[in-house]
Length: 503
Image (cartoon, rainbow, N blue to C red):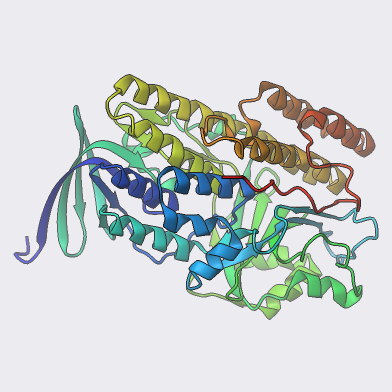
């Protein structure tokens, strides 16, 4: 062993492995409340990560975490205006809502007067109060540094070895300059798809329980033309009746193969990716570049737009196997998995950040019960149950969307999407009334809503478009507080934003 290598030994209350935004935020909160906390990662910041789109749900969760734990520096990230004025050096994007565009292979998209091939749902009332697109390399790196400033023992580029002991965990880490030994009473796995603890504890992962089967290809591009400019080349003023600028959104191009996302940041970089129906288009040995080009070539306007942009070679094109993960055991006596480690469904409708932030709140709330071990165990069990219920409901909502895509019915896709928007707009209006954080996201703990979604899911393949749309409207009526199905302009929703909380 080299004589100049640093030898470090630590004893901590909580070890968090994985320094993405949820891991760093969890470590910071626990340190703030007097826990001795360490945060480790096998790589370093800044680094590329996907999962870039916030929602009103995630912003409410982020705001409540900031208020609950007196993290004043965190509050500006809840809205576009405060973020860009307080932290102009941290890149984000303006997200006024959700946009969905029906694309047909071999044909240029032509907007219709009745918007039957478009769906736009506003999530905020103004740019200032808008949601944000997170450039994860910036926000993750910032939150990691905040953890360090809070006193968390932070280590990057550290190879990991875990040894469970009866009273806690022994950790051995090795970086280029340091040999590290840590004894931790509690371990939190925030490694996401790396699934450190899942593998170490040999937890039973069972994605076969999920109906969604999708995979992705993605990269970042500079100088991507705006969709509004593209459609107005052939039809001037085509966007005049849109409720917001269509590029200030998470833009979903619905394709024969699945869908494509465009997520635009303020620095002229756009995150672009395909999410493919893996049942019909399974992963093959085809090179990723060839698959990317082959799919793009089917859609003239998308292909032309990408051709005008410059791909960031520092990121390149990435491709995943099946995206879905599901681990039915999220917590034990001295460990817990963050939601993104325990399971993932699909990026459709941007549920990931919200689920991660809910996990931060639930796990930290449980661990703060220092003097009541029984309550801690009960809260961790509740965390497990709520997260699994949320994952299963999101699976129903997303897999139903793919069913509609397989039928080539954008009308069914748009009608079934209202299950998501009914869920989140109802949850958001309930959430602004309290800070207790006890309800599951997406109304997952509402048995009536779950049964409604199951019923509609089963009807997608059998009902006519007209009957399915009518059934969706009738079934979701108890959860429709924002005029879904009956906007003043067809498929254009301008008034779904959650009212500002008095807090």
